[in-house]
Image 1 (cartoon, helix red, strand yellow):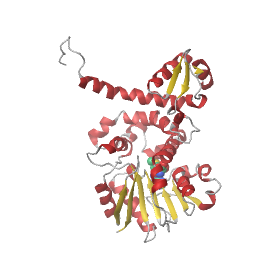
Image 2 (spheres, protein in one colour):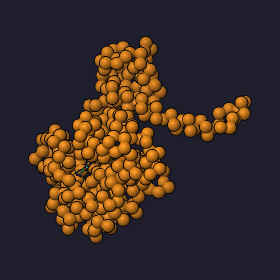
Image 3 (spheres, rainbow, N blue to C red):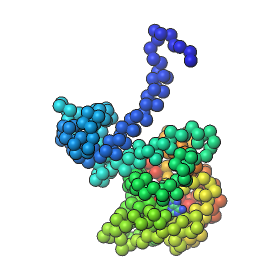
Image 4 (cartoon, protein in one colour):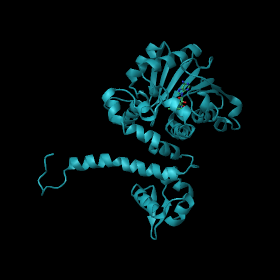
Length: 343
Ligand SMILES: C[S@@+](CC[C@H](N)C(=O)[O-])C[C@H]1O[C@@H](n2cnc3c(N)ncnc32)[C@H](O)[C@@H]1O
């Protein structure tokens, strides 16, 4: 290492790299707060840290240090006497908030995700996912064998579905749709929102049997339950037939091109001739700033499962190989809608 002149200040570049690499501490602190459930016992009125610690079962001094750091992020506010309250943004860390991101924060900072992403350099070296080397089995097999991990993952996905696909739920024109098949739909949060927002629609949730076993509570609501059904299966075998809209939200990004084409071709075979496939995904717009998060999500896909976030051109290629045609890309806040129709 070459030593800098002792009298020179830290360079802007060194300061920038320091800021970038220490940002992982920031996300870890937020995830720890989510994991501990501190926001669930806090409110917008200051509460002494000792009381918060007692309620969530932590060491009071250590919790003070965590909340003091979170105050720097403006998700909590510190008042005299080591008391803390939630800010407006901090409310989204509560489990019961309508815009809760607690589940996603827990997943992202949890051991499954964390131990995968620290091996990103290996994934880049080989071009292959590292999940199996780190966890002993490919992602979905691991989930099936580890219900606790799957529980946390599913709740993280619930949050992403409920928040990031908002533009799609509200703005996509479902006017001439009838039966929406949500392929790999998780616990059905997105389908529930779509059905609640568009009362003329009916829906099918299609998922792995392990996930289906836990989906009832989300879709079992008045006004929704009677318009939908749940089917268990494997989208590499087939998907439910007869729908006019096949929704795949953050599913295709889990897979490499060959697997993605198998899933899409099964949707094409199952759908009505006038139907459509809707991919709700973070779209990478090459060289454009708005795909910032998509480009990092892409690295997460590489490390986890050998999947990827794709550009409109890459989606068009996938569709073409599946007997479909890219009709349009509707970009949204966070997640866009990539629409395919029969070729
Ligand atoms: C990233 S999650 C997305 C879940 C949901 N669409 C959402 O946006 O919240 C991918 C989903 O694909 C499901 N999945 C994986 N392999 C599958 C298979 N072979 N057949 C059916 N579903 C599968 C997983 O169980 C998981 O819920």
